[in-house]
Image 1 (tube, rainbow, N blue to C red):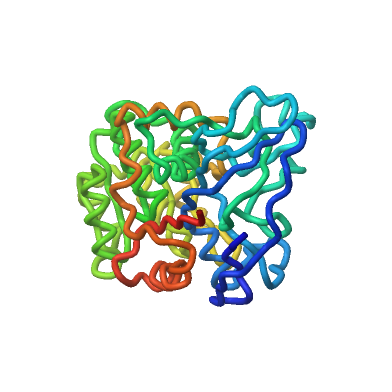
Image 2 (tube, helix red, strand yellow; image 1 turned 120 degrees about the horizontal axis):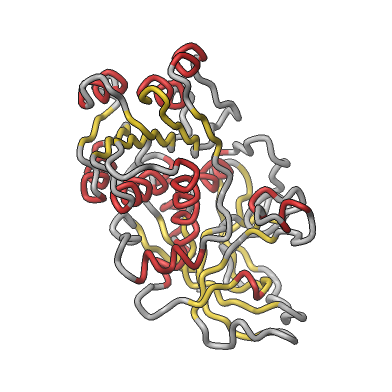
Length: 345
């Protein structure tokens, strides 16, 4: 079968892999139909591992994905052949105290599809635990099914923030996670959603997603602009979704007194830093988001009922052979690339 392999920094090749094995007990064979390119994939593409294990040549990325079940192993009743499914890529142990207490997203023994040592979904087929497959209703396309994973990340961040109706929310960074946070903040009843980014095309998408005001951080001081827009009050909830060295500090400065900052972005240098004085004097609550809890049923409901639009920011839909160029566009902020979805099969 075909796969997209990372042979080195910014070097992608379509290669041949052995066919996927037959599914064992509790497993299913999935034909992969849609894979979203995540910011983490871009870190790998650039050669940045963020403190994880080194990448070996031939590594297959991809953890945001959907597909069609082709076969199931013994004992599987959750799905059957022909089902369209979204796939949770995190295979937690299910046995440790954290898993038992409902926190599998921080399981110390988790195996994460598309991370170093665990081949990802940018291939035609793979075998996966059936309990991590989520059947898709007709109203949710395969593309949207793949993007339920980043929606889940955004939803978990929103849960951590626990915004109140009529709060002012700020989103720093309008990549896919940031754009989803803009949508979710409006669904949650925010009176205003302020958004920042370095690129005008992303800010236009933020407006479409429901941002009430946007600020290009290359042309103006985003902290001063957001404080001015709120009459000096600041934002009750701030989501740092850029993963840039400067944005956690911006979040601390723009947050209102007793506000909440949720850090979602992953910095390339593996550091998250902010000035202590404003955070301390304002009594901020700072939370670090790690993926998601078991929220797939909620993300499917949000998509199926039209409460969020998962496809409005998809800028590129390409086959596996065209993926290297799409990665180049996304990594270089070219061609108004916002979200790339790849179809391996």
